[in-house]
Image (cartoon, rainbow, N blue to C red; front, side):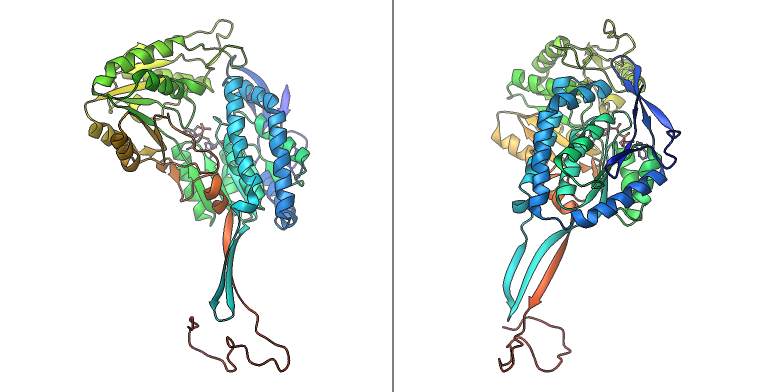
Length: 511
Ligand code: NAD
């Protein structure tokens, strides 16, 4: 049985006792339900050890030149691309998504590395000459020190890649606490950083659950925490981290709506929505679990969605031709099936019903087939809870205004999309919708890495979005330097900006 343990100070580390007697949890293959590895869980002592190693490494790393840091990132980028297949297979085996889908997340995560390869341009400071007579002012940003990331199971490569390349390129040392469900991608990335020449201790991986998360949030040596996960945990993480004096951004859950107006190309919209609803078995924070069909769009939209959902090939993620894999755990599958049961009992119509799906040879896998529920009402749990499964709820409304009001009543605000041929409606939607990321004839879009990623309302606690320019601001702090060089050469005369006697009034600019 493979044993996965922590990566601290540039080496595998089994915890303070070093004898492997620490608590372990099984890592499962969701396509078979069988255990494929055991994971060593950390505690406060492991976090403390990682922070000490990180703090030691950060002293040098934080002073290293931009050339040194970007050279590591250029090498990391190439290694990620060279190893994409190995990484994707490791992700697929523990998460269940298809290998091709895993390749997609690695490539999207790699965009963040692309962004920080241009660190010099992205971190240029500002300079003002002669702010006062003989006085110049310049502003630049510095690393925070040791920082941490806590990440969810659904993007075991991409979400950590939103964080650590930016934090590390900015001069910090980074401690990652990945999801305990699919930890291997983080271990492979740790090895790629080593091969890329990153000094030992600058990137660490500590495995665990709430115990490790709390130890990170409480640790006085960690300056900032980026969290991505479900809303209740995001809220608690942000509150605890802020109470401990840290900078915290906590990205939470989502329930993204796609509105289809009657003037939309319905066949095109259905294809986009189906990919958003069923890709990665709906386990994406940017999935499309709700289609809001306006007026005459509804009947043709439901018909086309049903056709597409029925055609999806479901099976183990590493089998060629498979388009959708299993859910992450048995509990997750049972919860999703229960939500569909409840919705059908409350009057929703299961136009395509994936509840009974059995994949031959994988009878113990955590599979649910693509499901399309028509005539879903806002009071149903399948509508207002985050389902995180391959279930698309269709809500029928009569007008654009009704659709917009429905989207805006959601407590979540990660993403929203509109499908229409009307520039006027598209523009109104983009301006009036209460969400951080908006798609116009694009299903919920993950912004390219030179923008930043983040939702509104209960989809993000904190005031910075992730990666890109906002990420760089999150992982650094600003410094403003005001400079004067009075002339001191003998006989050179008095510098006009320097008074001979002390002036006790508050300094202000003199014209
Ligand atoms: P989760 O909240 O269960 O876990 C996220 C992380 O928190 C994991 O590392 C986990 O070990 C840890 N954790 C779990 N329970 C904890 C607790 N009680 N206290 C402290 N830490 C705890 O989320 P998940 O199931 O791994 O991931 C799916 C969720 O993540 C979905 O809600 C999804 O929408 C969300 N997500 C959001 C985004 C975004 O950008 N907004 C991106 C990806 C995933």
